[in-house]
Length: 260
Picture (spheres, rainbow, N blue to C red):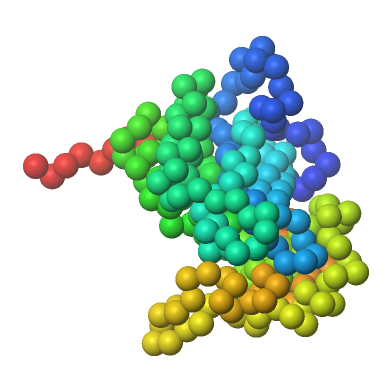
């Protein structure tokens, strides 16, 4: 697709955290990506920051690969809606209202500088509902256009293996940040983890918290996620994000008129 080129091209992104204000002032774009994730348990083998690390990596890779202009990469929001992991030491969480307010304020800050078309790149399943709600609110009520993008939902057939600290997230980090995976704990992580998320009866989940169905926080088999699969995941997520950025850039954001 026209908006996507594989790595090797000159980057078209600016990481705000690394830039000066005068650097940022010189960027001619209305496109931005805002990574959001969590700081929560990811089993005994993967870091607490997995969700925001992966979201940030996808956001940066997508901005790099986007070929139709520059893209601002905002710093990640690193704490999300994660109370379902609260029994595991080190997990941090905010209420959904707090998360929505934070995303809305940060998008509003970006928009105030002219970067008013924002893709919010998400790495945590627990954020999904609140993120969809706040992006709709921003688009309807604010001077910005915001679209949620959860990277692990946009990787083709791989998505069905998502789990938690399972094959996809382990593979991703083995590719991008291999030093963060405790390889000597992967076998135990697989053996003591759960096969599926939740305890389901009649399409209802009886378990509010992850600790009710997984002893070590793992869902899925991390042994099935090698670095090659991680590279494929990053490529697939990057291509999907580039397609979305192109659509957001071209979108007529004029609000529909009421019928009466």
